[in-house]
Image (cartoon, rainbow, N blue to C red; front, side, top):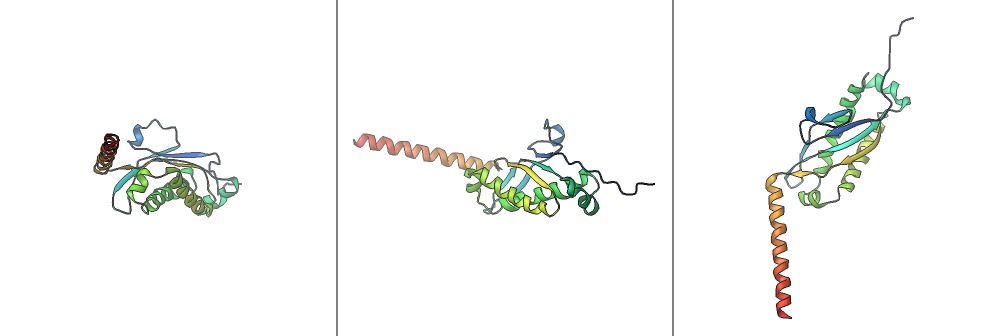
Length: 168
């Protein structure tokens, strides 16, 4: 008796972390570590973002995954998990303005991406157990402009308050 088809995928929870520095130098405890995801907002402002995702392969999905998509954890990760996350994040965030991403609720954005990934992965039998998008980081010129605008608003508000006090 010979074994001609061996199916061996990890069914434990695995983790994927996207970091803002060299993945090889990362102290992350994730199973897979990757570099930042880049994108542009709907108004053309460049950004980078990081994230954490945990996923698992249920026992009843192992046969389908190994037959159709990959015989190893690494193939399942690279062909489904990594590819779909690196595609979905910029696709979804590209729909928003820089102002919305800069000052918006990251949890709402994270939930939108999570819902999209769960739907995509359900077809392949992969379960997304946890997803957390980190706050996007913008080009330095945009960050500087936002800081200057906030300072100008603060100065204007202070002058208005001083004028109101002087008139009393």
